[in-house]
Image (cartoon, rainbow, N blue to C red; front, side):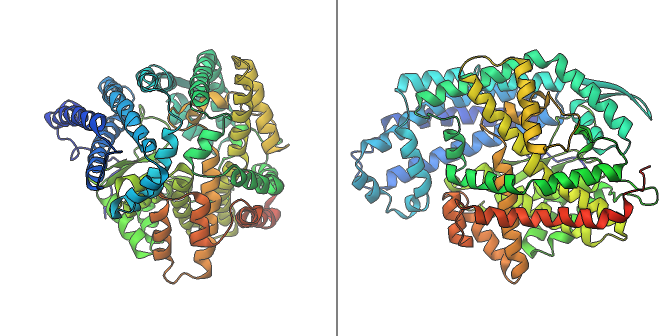
Length: 605
């Protein structure tokens, strides 16, 4: 198969954002929204004698939600592929405006769930369709009890565009406009933020990495006061709405969003903290292999290069072929899906200026497809990223026949499928190593993930917790944010780093997301949960793909504790499960340290 590096969006809306197909869809959405709002307002749940009218209305609501998501996703993708596209930016905001009155009306509608007794509610849910989405309906009934008056909720929905959503959008616009100007060994460069990040972490030349980091930190320092304002206003808006909806602690809402208990989160971090020393030792050994007197932030993910060994590299075609091949070692359905997605150009991977930094997988529910956004530069890490995002897409695909309500799985389990797919490719990379040094290079790539989950994301969680605590007392200045970030990095990384990234809070877009608070711990959850699944696969590969798919199909309709109990027979609130996952990753670190001993005195290029 010959794979192109750019995605195909043309089939979704011929003519693009300004074409007749897209305009017609928007007009139809508005008409559909207005009809639905009237139906929801007139619906009388208390007087219902049969379930069918309720079922039919829910199906119509799901159809509108899917159509709106489809249109909004398309506009976002167009804008991410070219951050200078003003039409895309305008359209994203326009779709937010279309949705606002619907969301207000929907909140008024689900309030009606609380108007019936528990006995009446349970009788209603005996309908086959409603019983299948029982978990989500019960979630919404509980959420309805938190809602304010209809007038207040309507006002909040209207204010969100210029409040939570608005501040997040300002961050996106501001960060996208930054340029990183630096002179490197191959000449002068003017990078976008995304390009600079990729080069900074992937350049084998330590002086190049240092120069980019200095320029990077300077750029975010210059914009620091703006980003401090944005972060404070996001948190202030969020905490105000949380408190008025009955959330007393800043973690209450993110835990609820991830359908997990606080005891589970605490057990997970306890296991990570108890075992972090081996990953700190890995970074210290990496420092020795890099021949550096000190390890700085920009060096944590640096590639290992030896004078007589080329690092494993791929062109995009090779990476696609390799990922598809290795997915076949896990199961034929995962392999066939990845092949289909790549051949049909679901992936935007081209390395060019003007793209948004980072990567993601997003859904297009009207066609039951996904699209993947990333920037491919040729490293083994990029091949793992491709696998990661294809894992997300596979998760979405296995749920395509489920009711719309059961497809909205939480972020923590969303990271499970992606990380499992990434693990398959990372282990395959290791198996194909030709020499001991090449094996070390690939172990290093694999351990980048572990250090990110156990150290980097731990630092993010510690920082965000301290920030929200401080924000309760008022505005948190840029200098305090910097100090909080350095303290968090010190606690997470120990003495492994000499130079830290004080403005990391400003450069990481996850802190500025408007939809999901605490966009950090779900990654570590998904990583460790996937390691547990992969360990089960290694014990008994026969038929495991079907068991895995069965688990994924349940991710949208139960808590993570119930999911783990049903499919793995483990208790997530206890540290033992998490310790097993951490130990699997720790074995890689131990192997790296042991196998690298003969090469400590060798210098890099």
